[in-house]
Structure formats: structure tokens, C-alpha cells
Image 1 (cartoon, rainbow, N blue to C red):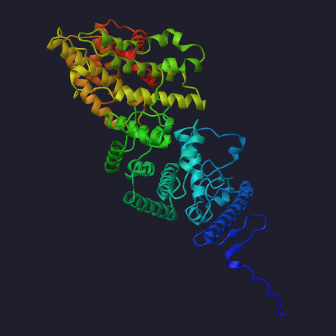
Image 2 (image 1 turned 120 degrees about the vertical axis):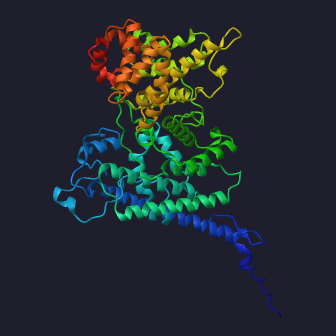
Amino acid sequence: MDTPRKPAPRSQENRFVFVGQPALTGVGGSGIRSKLIREAQRRTQAQRQENGMAEINKLLKQRAAARCSCRRTTVPETPSQFLTGGQPEGPADLARCSFCRHIPRSRDSLFANERVHDLGCTVLDPMLPINEKTSRLKLNERFSFACRHIFPKLRSLDLPDLYRTWAFPFDNDELKLFSFLWSSKYHEGVLRQISGVPEDSVGLKEQLTLKGLTLKALRKEVASYTRQKPLDSIIGCILVFAVNGTTSERLYRDPNPFTPTFTRLHGLEAYGSRDYDPLHWNILCELLEKNGGIEGLHYGALAWQVSVADLTNAVHTLRKPFFPIMNFYGQKLELPSPLALFAPYVHGDICNDAKSQKAGSGFSELLFIEPPVHEMLVTAFSHVGELSYVITCMSTQSDPQLLDLLASSRNLVHHRLFSLPTEDDPPDQILQIDTQSTGGTTERSMELYLICRLGVLLYATHVTFPSPRPTVARGQMLRSLYPRLLSIVGRGFSSPLILWCTSLALIAFDGTEYSGQISLLFKELCRNLHVTSLEKLLGILRSFTWVDLAVMHHYTNIEAYIGGNL
């Protein structure tokens, strides 16, 4: 009798059983192998992240014992305050090196043969990606340095948003990663020069290596670019090359006959006087023009940065801005007039103050000439006067919210100022010309407008938007302003507006070969307008745009000119 045969076992190749999970039947093309590989990759990545977090926690526990290794004999007070934005954050900071933020070594160990460690290496962000590439390029150290020395100089109030926008994502975006690393390393080298810390050969090699990697990534990105991908990484990289591409940049201020305040807002001290690389800057402008303009950028902080860079370049070169001024979130900046904007923030209602009502009102003289200047242009001049009054009221403020708001208002006011028509534009863009206007009156109105514009630009570049290197621009403006003043006063015309412009020229020419000639013109205007005292003169000047703190050191000479003693 035959023994019944047992059924053949089901092939194990066609069935996979997981404990607590559904069975997967092997069918051709089901992708089981790929699923298993992906699961293994996820587990490996999670394990790496866990190991990285453990390493970070270990480093953070050791940071209290971190010692300063900067190779210098003394810690320069003034440069370090200039770099970091001023005062220490708290009592604990007083015991740390103002440059690298480590605990200083004893005096005898400062001369040890050690390499300068990476700045900011005690502040590591656990959210940054950790892999072989980022570790080799010291991403954590570079980003820590930027958070301490670069970002706060640009924006103090919106630093977290700026952090998130520029930090992420680095995954699969080598161009953004290398652009950030190179610009941070370049900035570190500049700050070392200012602080008197020599750059070693290793640091220079790292900077050149990062620049080469950035150029290589840029070429690769441009070659493979399609319109489905945002242009932001390319624009951000080109902006870095445009601003930092020139060599032998100076970051100290030119001699200035005025003494301005708020010289560091939004990085103006470091970036307001750079000679942009024309090739990269023109390419950036063309790319944005062909791809929806600055409003088409996805990252709001990048749009803001491009617009501020455009404005500072316009102030430095005395040209019209190319882009609209943007806010931090990538939208066109719209703010009330300076007096209305800052009324809630200043003790007492400055809008109801008699002096504030007068600030900027002197420019209304242009509305009563024939033919008059367009009211919108006069308003742009008046807002500079209002901003001057606000600067005077807030000269001792240190609140980050107010300072960021003041910088934004300053950007908007000066963007409108530098966008005004020039002598190369048609007269109907400047004057309200009608059929009754004659050639002679139109010519004089145009001359008054151009004199006023030059005077406000001269004042703005030295006081309200103080460029670190105004010498070249000052010479260019004075060469155009001085003969116009001589011509119009020589024809017998005197007015408070002309006196204000002449007073600015008198201060700007101080100590030059032209000071004697401009002083004669100033005395003549004072006689014609019956100005017999410094107090009466200041009453006129403050009705235009005037910050006493910026010109107070000239009052002794001005009073002597009025009294005929000089």
C-alpha cells in the first residue's frame, strides 16, 4: 500500500513573512529588494544621526574648558567692538576672548606655537547635517562664526529667520553650501586683518580651496540649470562674488567733515563702501531682469539682501538703484513717513513737537516757485529731514527692534531719494510745466531742483546714510554744486534753500583750498537774509535736514563767519 505523499512545501523564494507585518509575495517586478535596501538605508542614516548627536553632546560638555588660542599679545578693544557690534552680552562674556569667544589662556601661553582654532567652534547646531563632507569643510564652525559675527551685523531682530533661510537646505545644493562657506571664510579673513591677527597659510589655503569649490559648483549649476528649479542659489552665489570679488578692500572710514551716528546698521560699515565686481553684478542684474525680477526669488532674505546691496552700491556710486527696496520677507517695503513711524517709540509724541513739525518743511519752497517741482519729489526731500530729526531723538537708543526699524526706514527713504530724476531726465518729470511756463522760469526752477538734490545727496552720504568711503563721491558732488551756487547767487537770488546748501558746502569744504571762496558766498547769503546769529541760522537749517550731533564741532567757525571774525 502506497504511503500518501506529503504536499511539496511552498517555495520560500515566493513568500516573505515578517513578524507583525503583512506577508509579501514575490512577484516579478514587485520591488521587494528595493524596499529592503531603502529600509536598511533609513536605519543606517538614523544610526549616523544618533552617533552625531552623541558626539555633539560630548563636545558641548567640553566647551566650558575651551581655551583661547589666538596668537596675539593683546586683545584690541576698539576693533573687536566694531566687529561684534558693541557691548558684551553678559557678565560671563567678560571672561571670554572677544575674538574667538574662548576662555583666555594665561599671558605666558599666548605665544605658544599653536594654530588659531576656527572661530565660534563652541556653538554647534545639532540641526545642521552631519556627514563626511560637512565635517571635512568644518560647516559647524563656519556657521557658528557667521551667527556670531555676520548675521547680527545684518539683522539683529530677525536673526532666527535669517538663520533658517540661509542655513537650510544644504542637502543636494552644493552651490548654496560652498557659497556660504567661502563667504564666511572670506569674512573671517577680513576681520582678522582689522583685529590685527595675521592670517596663516592654512587659513589662506582654505579660503582659496573654498572659492575654487564655489566656482566649480557654480559652473555645474549653470550648465544643468532648467527653469523648473529656483534661481536663488545661482543669484546668491553671484552676489557673493560681486560684493567680495575685488581685492584689497578697506574697511576703515575715510576722513569725514561730519560726525554721523548709526554707522553700522544693516552692515553698512562693512559693506557700504565696496567696489562691486562689475562682471558679476551686471550678470546678476540681467539674470533677475530675465527671470521675473527680484520679486521672483523664493527666499525672502535673499531678495532683501540683493535690494540692500543694490542700494548701498547706488549710494557709493551716486546712481539710481536698479531694484525696488524689499523687506525681509521678500515683499516691497512700504512704511509711513519717519515721524509717523517712530511716534509710538519715542518718549512723548514727536509728531506733536514743534521742532518735529518743522523738520523737512523748508523744502516746500520748491512748491512755490514757478513752475513748481512735483510734490512727490519734494516729499522725498522732506522725509530725509524727518529722518534726521528721528536720528537725533534716537541717538542713544540700543533696542534691537527700534534699530532694525530705523535701518529699514533709512533704506526706504534713501531708495526714494536716489531714485529721483537727474539732469539727464526730461524736465516734465521734475516740474509741473503748463502752457504759461516760460523758458526763463523753467530754467531757474530746474536749477533750484538740481541744487537741492545735490545738497540732499551730499548730506545723505555723510550723515543719514553715512558711506564709509565718501571722499570720491563728495568731490564729485561739490564740483557740480559749487559752480551752481556761485551762478544763482551771482544773479541776485537768495533763499533759505540756497543758504542751507551753501552751509553744507561750507562744512564739506572745511580745510580745503576752496574754504575761503565758499565762506565769502556764505557771508553774502547771511547778509541778504538778515541772519545775524548762530541761533537764527540753525533755525533755518533745521527746517530742512540737520543733525546737530553731526556738525556741532563746526559751530564755532560758523559763528565766527556770521560775526565777520573769519
